Every structure is written in C-alpha cells, then in structure tokens.
Amino acid sequence: NAGVTQTPKFQVLKTGQSMTLQCAQDMNHEYMSWYRQDPGMGLRLIHYSVGAGITDQGEVPNGYNVSRSTTEDFPLRLLSAAPSQTSVYFCASSYLSSYNEQFFGPGTRLTVL
Amino acid sequence: GQQLNQSPQSMFIQEGEDVSMNCTSSSIFNTWLWYKQDPGEGPVLLIALYKAGELTSNGRLTAQFGTTRKDSFLNISASIPSDVGIYFCAGRTPLVFGKGTRLSVIA
Image (cartoon, rainbow over all chains, first blue to last red):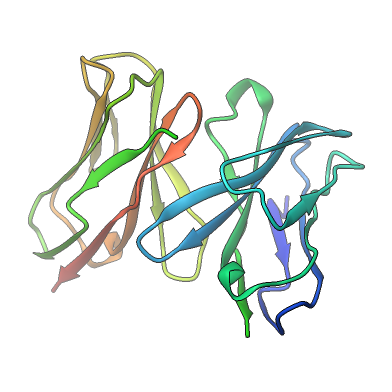
C-alpha cells in the first residue's frame, strides 16, 4: 500500500491563480479530510468527506472547494489564491468506524506571492 | 470553536531525560489522541485514548485520558534523539488539534 499520497510536494502561485492539490489513498478509507498547518496554529480542518459524493465544511473552508467522485481521491481546489493561503496542506484518511485514527499524507507546501 | 491548550509550546531536554506534556480543554471530549510530526512529514498517530482515566503505553510513551475528560497527558521516558519533533494532542468530538509541543533533544 502507498498509503496517503499528495501532489505536488511544493508549489508557488501568484495571487489570483487557481490550482488543485491532489490527494489519493489506496486503503479503501471512507473518510478523507484536508487540513492546513500554519506556524503556531496547529492543524485546522478545511473540508472533509465521509464517502464518495459527500463533502462538508470544516473550520476554515473559505477559498477552498472539494469534491469526492471516487473513494480514492479527494482533491482540494484553490479558486483564486491569496497570500493568506500560504501554508502546508495535509490530506488524511481513515475508516469511518475509526475516523479518529487518521493517516496523514506527506503534505504540500504552498506559497502564494 | 473548541480549542485545546497544549503545553509547553517547546522543550529542550537532555538525552535520557523524561518528558511530560499536556493538553487541556474547556470542553469534554470522548476521545483523546496524540500524534508526532517529524520535520517535512505528516503527523503520525502515537496513542489513542477512549475512556476517562485510561492509561495507555506505546513503548517509551505513556498517555492518560484525564478523569474530567477535559485533559490528557503524554509522557516520554528516557528520551533519545529520534524523539525530536512536534507532538500534537487532538480531542474529539469534533476532532480538534492542539498547537503542538516542539521537542528538542540534546545529545
């Protein structure tokens, strides 16, 4: 198993550009989520999904869109990047029955200029 | 939203020393989790606690679910250089993360 994979590992954008952060897992996990990590802020939940076709907002959803067309993939879209979205983004997944025990991907470090 | 207060924010310790860190909340949680994050990596689950008063060990790590359900503690015994990293507590429900304790071990 590859676990949770994220691409790209690093990305630099200009303000106003759009992009999609990719996340995939091969563990057949129902639950997937996106977090952002900022210095001194810990991890904050952006969006999550409990299964294909079902998504919901987390603590800091503004400026981000998600979709879940398959169990394996959960892309995060930045519609119009802003400097405030400079952060490290982590995708995580788990079984619904044990969604506390999430497995995290290696992260995507995004810089918005 | 709910917040977790994790302390200390950072620690510098000598190799071989024991380490203690804790997490408190104004809200009751049903589950407490402890994660470790190595530099450039995502967090990895260390210990999960599901019952008030529960004490669980994972090698040199021991974590406790506070009896009030508003706090949790993590102890690391006989620290080694590879213990370096950021340790996060998390509580559920909903799943909320603390801001982390950055541990540095001096050989």
